[in-house]
Length: 224
Image: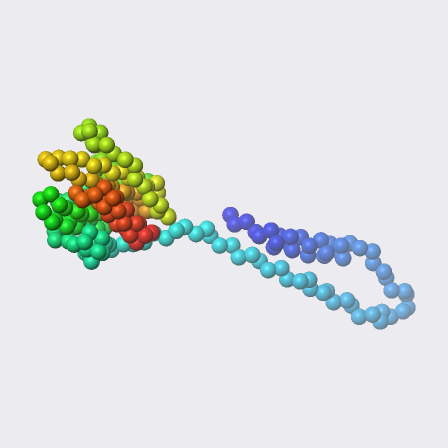
């Protein structure tokens, strides 16, 4: 049932009270034999009270993103970030469970067997923000969760992301088969979308972190 605005209710009470007082007040009858010369008093309308316009609460709109292939972070942007792109290997895409895959992509700059840098990212839509955040935690666990078991020290990595959920991330450096490399991963939900980015580098820890954070910032801004 719709409630009447308080201003309208108050105005109705004032009008009703005025009518009641006029109808029940003392009446002065004209003297016998004398005609009534005064014209009847016309009711003076009171000031109109505007009715407030009630609007429904608004909720942030969710963007309907079109699925694509390496479109949300284009190759040209990856070239500027990495210094070059000569390989796109779908086997390096970030793994996700369920949802509607919007864009999964990887870019690599392979300079030699011991010199490689790259990024991978994933944007997937789920049925709710809660599900998307749960999937972001899975990505973090998959990419870095087993690091401790292999003596791979993982450090926390985060960044501001307006409109997003809690940002999950970390990075670690490891030497394997004589090659030292760093992997950094950042992810969270932006509404019902999972947004995750990974950066890898054999050149420096700073590069891996920068790659992941730069791609994540671009994606979360585009989704939000």
